[in-house]
Image 1 (tube, helix red, strand yellow):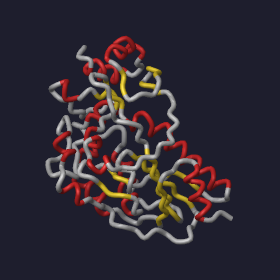
Image 2 (image 1 turned 120 degrees about the vertical axis):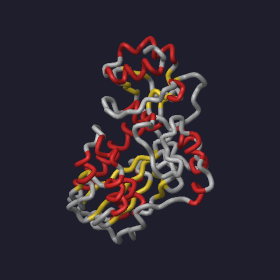
Image 3 (image 1 turned 90 degrees about the horizontal axis):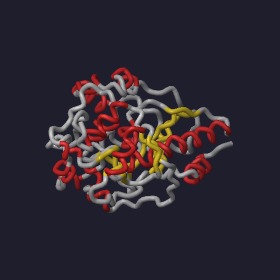
Image 4 (image 1 turned 45 degrees about the horizontal axis):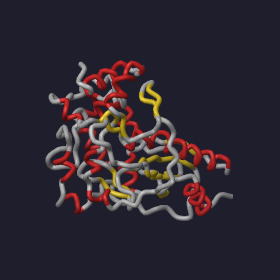
Length: 295
């Protein structure tokens, strides 16, 4: 019979850096309030509004397993090159794979296990795994904000459940810092913090192709040479400067909408100019042309 210690040992073995087990959350009042007040959530194509509403329905399971995975590689970008985010380089090719491994492990030991649609950052706060910064990013304890969050619903019952913490946890450091607000190239972060205009965010602009309400900056320079994502608000954060990252990273090649390349933190303008015709997504090609000032 599977016990909690063996579950945690296996999770650590496959590269899940932090794990907490909660009873299913009955309600997320702050997230519900946010959905009611933030009308921009009703205009996102990549995640239709009904899916946000569905995340407020308690999943049919005995436990929520909340997992944190570090995806930081580096942020030493060569001057003049077009930058590729840590999230784009590493998160997607690893986190889901590791969670599926844990799912299989649970199933092989006689338990149900499936991804559940819950507010991930709020659930991670309630699991005691970290806090929310002024840039709205989740900061995992000791690891900082370059992390992925995944939640599995299961019938596995631990020795004891983690005592639920508040839905939103903030850091006192943020109140005296505000570097992320000042550094954001497109001023997407609200001046008072803890709220972001997704349509102005560079990560939203270059990742979510076909979104009607993307707010392109008037000045190309405001795109800050980001070809994938944007992590300026995280790069300047003093909490991240003290983060203790996990070094054991195995990184696959990248595929930028048809451009296959070695995984790197940037691509030169000359190389992207030579290879932009390999891009299969017309919206991303349009973004690249703007970035290269060819539109």
